[in-house]
Amino acid sequence: MKNQRRQFIKNCLLGAAVLSAKAPVFAGQAAAKILIIGGGSGGTTLAKYLKIIKPELDITLVEPKAVYTTCYMSNEVFSEQRTLKSLQFNYSALQRRGIKIIQDKVININPLKKQAQTQQGQTLNYDRCILAIGIDFKWDQIEGYNAQIAEQIPHAWQAGKQTQLLYQQIKAMKKGGTVAIAVPPKPYRCGPAPYERATHIAHYLKRHNPTAKIMIFDYNTRISMGAHFKHLWQRDFAYGKENALIEWFSGEDESGIVALDVKQKAITTAFDDRFKADVINLIPPQKAGALATQLGLTDETGWCPVNLRTLVSKKYPNLHIIGDAIQGGELPKTAYAANSQAKVCAFAIKALLENKPIDAPSYMNSCYAIMADDYAVSSVAIYKLLKDESALHRVSGGLTPLNSPAYIFQREVAFARNWYRNITTDIFN
Image (cartoon, rainbow, N blue to C red):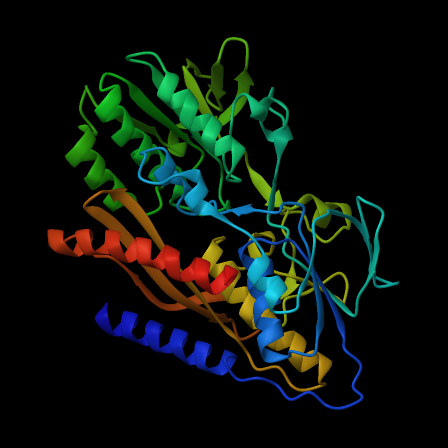
């Protein structure tokens, strides 16, 4: 475990050292136009690092929101360990680097003309375009649920207003009430996050509403980081006992949610069981962002197939796609993975513009799940291309061992919060 972590850190430092070098600018060379759609963890990282390694580029980032709210670490809002404001970042650092920020939404792209149209009527020309558009939801998979109803029955899987709404609903819930959390089928954004959310809500309820109950309805048969979550739930919430604060219904029992009755505040499982709840956190099945579907960039899975060496769409040669929207094989859909993809994509674009060969990349993921004030778990991994380059597979990594002494889990909590400061600094500063 120590050796794996040491090698992981060395690889990260090596990548940072390489990225600090600046590419030469040749006199008379026309600046290529780079258009980045989406200002989340992937798109913002890409804009920054492209400007670092090839400063002459004419880079424009289009993002509807002036302020980005990270979904990662947002579960701490429910246990009152963090405010929503502490998760928010703007794009002033990118602007200081000479990157144009357009607060608008791209509604169409013509890959043949290399043009994008925005909601406010702008036409943007580009030499290379990168979609960092995140996820969308398969609303039709849950009867009675849609984007409008989600304003009352929040998913809170895109942090911001819905995060605050869900927190307020939990806070206002009657004594002894029930919270239902619906976990979608994989793949979805951030595997451990639904269970981490349940844990933070449980900590809040234990302090303020100790006779309440949380029911987790899961499409899946296994909990990500499950041994750790169950250990913590047993320790703090009597999991597995009659008076447990948290109860988990496994996908083995067809416990995924397939229908919602808004008026009755009731949900129905695939097994046709019906449950009422005072607060419902219904996280829908997921797919690539809506623009990808509109442009025909997805396949039958709902995700975007890409060349994993260059992150170029397999549909159009001048479009790159990064972040949660892609098919990444074993690489999970996380902020750190998007950050890693952005750096790979930056070097690929530089090589393509300079007609140079592109080395086979490595991708990284690092994430934390905070389960209590004194208990967090980390997961790190490195991924490489399969020999036929059809997918990424994990080649090294590790998870905090379950039998670690208590001080290790306490230390991981501090590491998790430092991780958040470091990654958001890397992305937004």
